[in-house]
Image (cartoon, rainbow, N blue to C red):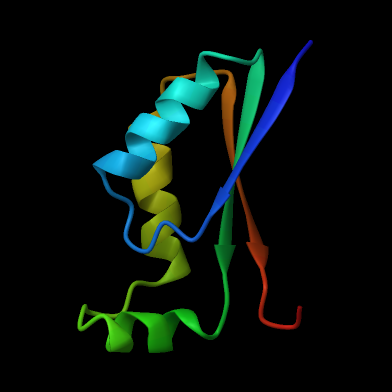
Amino acid sequence: MSLGVVVGKFLPLHTGHINFINKCSTKVDKLIVLLCYSDKNKDICKENKIPEIKKEDQLRWLHSVYQDIDHIEIRYIDESNI
């Protein structure tokens, strides 16, 4: 069984991310999409002049896009102390 991992902040999730994840998912038997978030996300949003995007929103977006694709698994990691 082949396994792939896509890592990103997805801040915000956009069609480029979705196309990349979709393409990666065709190359492996199982794909893990790893959402990385930290306390700095608030600053990143402010710098880019977009409303604050919370981890829960990011996870909801990813789950809603990939809810019907069994071989894609959404996970997350807190990078605040890394």
